[in-house]
Image (tube, rainbow, N blue to C red; front, top):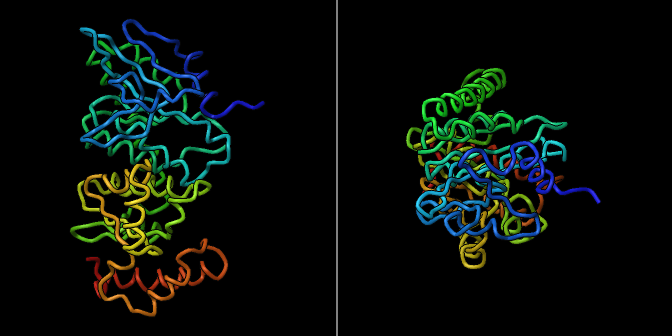
Length: 328
């Protein structure tokens, strides 16, 4: 039987980097275990910041001091590049290592080299997180990149230099792609990526529907979280309105009541400077446009539903940009 992505990554971590480096110890659990969902302080691999629990990591390195385990690295890994994950799905695991970064540690998102390439946007998100949070966020495709970091855990100057080498490489990859694809222009980016840049806020709109968050077979909820973090870290410091065009405020209330403990929904509702909005929050929206969106609110975006959605998006995008429509 083929190994799962988690099992492949966990075996590779142990085989490549071992279980200890000096005083550093590796914390890792078998795939069948749920211990990683416990907080790091309680022996698990999940980091909490300001009362918000972020996704569990696959591995972590720590030092024992005065009877306590002091975190050093939280690592989330995936074999997604060998499993057809070539697009936005790569963003959905970004938050797993983010908890470590927000707490001042090193967060690592390891995407094992494969058929597909790492989405360049991930590098930009992680560089921004490293600049704006208290820890460092590294995106790598080779576990050997961590060896000099592990070996210099007690040498602050060299540790910082090794991290900066990776960060510089990440930034170069991101900027090269951004300049090629968007001409170095955030305005061009915004028009291609369902994003509206206003002086005081960013509006990111999407065609998510309530079923994306209630049906276990749906993955759009995970992707929605990734898109939210992309918007936040590309435009760090600005208020983010995440506009769910196929949802109503009633849908939000329903999910708040029934999915309060769902990890993805919880993050969407609790990330600082991010507010979910729906079609009900668009002041000045023509009732005919709203009725069209309501007619497809439970339909996947394909065929006629996609055509209707695109027509509505064209109207709403233009209105939000010229301020004939506003978000309340």
